[in-house]
Length: 504
Image 1 (spheres, rainbow, N blue to C red):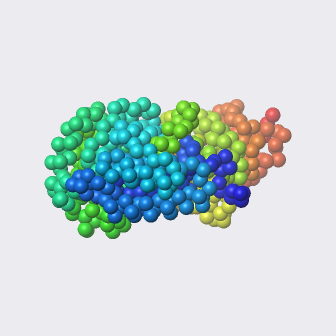
Image 2 (image 1 turned 180 degrees about the vertical axis):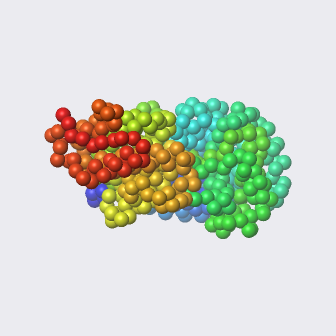
Image 3 (image 1 turned 90 degrees about the vertical axis):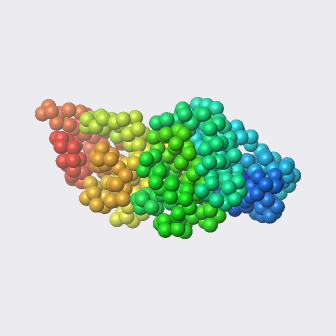
């Protein structure tokens, strides 16, 4: 077998999940089972298996043939990618249709793997696991809207409550209402009365999972001219988004920005997704709607992890892997993450637990742009970080990490250099990002981005009350004009007397 490229982690074996939904069938090949799994390949086809299932009780015949044809391609792609394990999951349409068992048998033969037909409860549970995989200490209600059903489940950290499945998928609602979105509200309200768990979610977050809701959020993002086009952890504030949802539920989307970026198939389901979300808001009264890019597939992989890995921080795990793949030395990145915590304490910069983990992540990815031209390292690092497929981080957190690395490469530049991200970061985050960037600018000149020196640098109070960063005498040659100038910049920013000295 050919040696993997340096852009791959050597301890991973590719694993594939084929997701057979009521509307779409999808193949996702992951680099391996990990706390923050990376996608090697992703392809979907809108088969529409659940179309007309209410009236006929059967999977759509044309959809069945299209799906089976696509499964042959999926199998070939898995072989091409060197996949050793193929997991096949089927949801609402396959478990409800009279011809579901026959279709599942044929699908298993084509894919060369057993097909696991998830019960409604299992589907809800894997959706919850998907939120655990993609968020740091989540707390709220998970809602996974598919073509055939809506799964709801309560989640607090790594604990789940009871789940429920409701027949409120987009394709099903479209059929039940005869394609009239205006008739959906009454159907949804009647079914949602059974979802008493929503009453436990007041003031908490609602995690929206599923393609229809992601496309709904994308439309909301375009309407707001939102500066960061990253779907995971995109937030729709409850009160602010209700007029938007009402407009979509009326199917009044023709003039909306970005509506043509939603496929025609998905576009026809948006009013039903909006109507379901409106009823969720009415019944639950969540603090806000949080969009998730992780769901059943990632939840299934999450279940494969041992308990220690499940409880690992997904952001720091992903950032550490990026340091391994793209930095000059991952050990240096880890040393930097440890040392800057001591430095913040010495400078009197307090941190919340969330700021602590963001600072560590910023340090772990601080050297990923080193192969770029020096004049573009800052902007390239900023773009990679702000748009990376990180999980376990919200958008203001992305702005913190990206800005810190912009400042690390380009200095404490005018704030106009990254206006879009500055809209997302709080003044406190911007201040912390600048302090971190200034610190990194000093120590990179003392360490040459290689390990071993940073842990030897210590802080002390001088006789005159000023702060000193001490270089051990055996490394005195690292002292010089440029690091002194960088330290002066840090001193001016913090408003403190700070000196770079050599001492025993």
